[in-house]
Length: 248
Length: 255
Image 1 (tube, chains in turn yellow, red):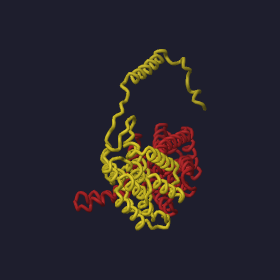
Image 2 (cartoon, rainbow over the protein chains, first blue to last red):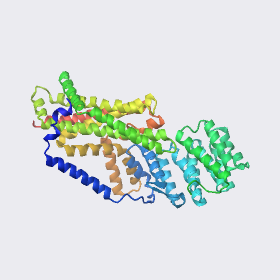
Image 3 (cartoon, each protein chain N blue to C red):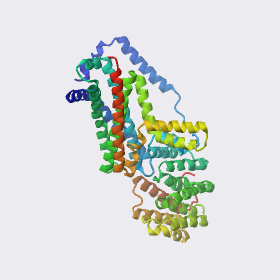
Image 4 (tube, helix red, strand yellow):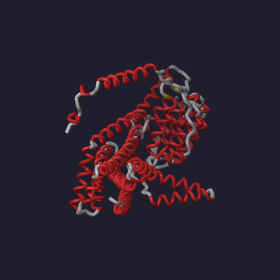
């Protein structure tokens, strides 16, 4: 039976009630129209909660909470209406948040991409090092799955920080520890990349090309993100700028 | 007797369908797809995994919330309409009434499990989506049985809803609470050890719903037959326990 059968026509409603409804609706709209518009205000990323607190909050769904937490952290440099330069973010705190995300979902790769490719692209070398060290420490926990991010980190160390020993250390770690059958042979030859007189754009092209060829990048968003990074590098190489990143 | 129980189950299911529960489930499914799709667009990588995990988590909570709320409000309506008294006046054992109600709610839980399980098929292979859907069905059965018990015992909507949701939260957090309790007992404080023991005792009484309907299965496709077996066994035991507790209460009731 339809709902209409139980409802009287609008004419049955007293005019006073209709007037009151219209009046309160107009009042509500006027109230909101005259209210001060929301002002975008940058907030600091709060300290990362303990792993125990996050596990409790996950209610048995650590993977879902991990993904949601990652978006929360990622959103902090692009808060509603405010864009915060990476160089003013507290990198130690961000690294701790990324660590928590990874602890909730150790099979996830998102925090490592964010550390090596997003936050690691900051112009401030001290901050970039915090992220590279985060990637290196997490690589040691699962080398066969996490080596691509240390490879990215090696390129950042080589071309952004101009720290050849650090870049070689990362490349060496991949050779020595990422020895699983799913790791392509070229990954263990990263040291050659590092030592060759290649510029950043060519090194990045070689790395991303290798990852694509071996089917290690399948997500369309990641593909677009890395392709945009290559375009940025292309432009900055073309204009011969020494800018540290897209949003330093 | 079986026929009487089936009739009660049928009318319980009909009541749910007349309450537009199916439409509500469809709206929930669309909303969850919309929210998870929006968040998926924000991801730089693992976008599909992110959408699968969030969709799974949202649908799971929504299914349990709707089932628990329907069980409690339906039982209250029946009590207010004196339907319970009418049924108790018939020459039927009280067990038939309770089993009929349970069967009706169990049939009702098939709707979200099938609908949401179909959505899970877009993210996971059929075997994993089926495991997730069956696990959701078992989770809904446990919550429905507990909600029924709450309503028989507490007889009021608000306390029954609060008890059902508190039970659900505790059952999903109990694994982590146990880990925390054991971590605390390592500190050798008498208070912390007592707390750890109390949590362990609570863990013996609760179903560990943190092992049910895991979004990991949709993201990493690592659910196994052993998971299914453990979930099925826990569901059989717990639904039987709730039914026995419900019968205990129902037979003592002065109607």
